[in-house]
Amino acid sequence: MALARCLAVGLVGLDGHLVSVEADLSPGLPAFVLVGLPDASLHEARDRVRAATANSGCPLPQQRLTVNLSPATLPKSGSGFDLAVAVAALTAAGVLPPEVSDGVLHLGELGLDGSVRAVDGVLPAVLAAARAGVRSVVVPAAAAEEAALVPGVRVRGVRWLAELVADYRGEAPPQLPEPPGPPPAPPTAPAGPAPDLADVVGQAEARFALEVAAAGGHHLLLSGPPGAGKTMLAARLPGLLPDLDERSALEVTAVHSLAGALRSRSASALLTRPPYEDPHHTASVASVVGGGTGVPRPGAASRAHRGVLFLDEAPEFEARVLEALRQPLEHGELVLHRARGAARYPARFQLVLAANPCPCGRAVGRALECTCSPAARRRYAAKLSGPLLDRVDVRVDVPAVTRAEVAEGAAGEGSAAVAARVRAARELAARRLAAHGARSNGELRGPLLRGPLRLPAAATADLERALERGALTLRGVDRVLRVAWTVADLRGAAAPGRDDVGRALALRGVPGGLAGVAA
Image (cartoon, rainbow, N blue to C red; front, side, top):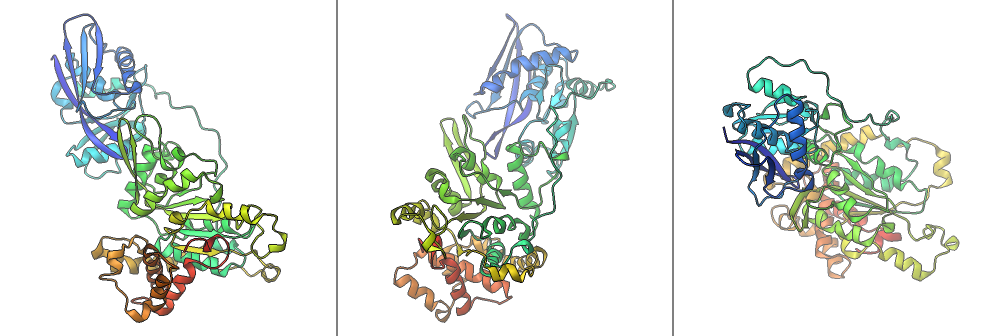
């Protein structure tokens, strides 16, 4: 057969597009031509495929082989096309019968010895193929369990190209050794127990703010002097969040698969716990929001989808990094444009910011010890811009722990008890919001808050006065109403009252420190 076809998937961001891999074998000088907008790593598939087929006992004929990746206008990248190119080429050469690979997705990288190696993005690729109607996929054996997470798809994992060729030809499987795996990762220390909220000394107001943030999916700013417990509180937020539902777990696992974060996990199991990302303050824009040459890759903001993105020492981050977060905070996704196209990644995370009150960190409660000039303090506070802080629902001061609190030594409430209240509040909100397309109060929009969920005037009187005197923007009003619904959910109320709105106003901007810079 001179012309053959099989299927692959091209990923642009998290969106997968079905690609028809066409191979044509024609008389002429030996050549291997690959067309269809491949990138450099995909161009190298020609040498990998030719060596892999030869070492698998089925060398390609010394003729002109043209492989087209259709649609040709779609950018294609990575080594995951190797297996599909090899199957199409062998079918065109008459080595494989054409009907066996018809309508079957092939995904995997080939080693020169013919081994089939795992690639990143198997889960989103198989998800895209399933949506397009593909029901049979062939993937590397190392990624078979990851691909099997997609319901309704028959998955075949292969270790060697020769093994797949024998199966397609109806021959007995060859006796092949275990293919060489990647270099072993350096040993890591076993993970300790999850951090517990009972470890935090004092900080009753900050603990309540953390509980509200967890129950409603709200963004949080913790401002206070060094050593007050801001980082400890932020690290315990994921332990208060409920497990991901099936749809969210697939979304999160797909992002981590594309980012290559599943390689170190055994069997690439479904991620059911909310992720936690805490990049260092020297992180670049590309590492936080995503980037790279060609089609951009997901960054920490997308890896934190349905989880927590914690920025410790937030004013020390580059302004470009902080301002780049405004889009995902508003829309729950990142759209990264490059010359070869735009990539879209989900990024509905909870942002937690931790900041000192000034560069030296001693301006709150210890004003006499602060060594910063007024100008230095203003510059430091201005690093968190008003538009960014306006998108943060809960802003609370975390004062230094007092001697009396340390002497008391009584352990605070543990994460398990708080998580149970958070779970109950989330279930209450989910039932109320099911008809409105939202999952948590943190996703509520203004039209909904001023429409079906509008509160009576008696409950919002203080809020309207704050808007009238310019203490809040209209966005800020919506954020306060979101938090008020969460405060009501935590106490099991049907709707917020005036006290709930007042508590939400207090959580919006406690006087002092960076929490009160922008209302």
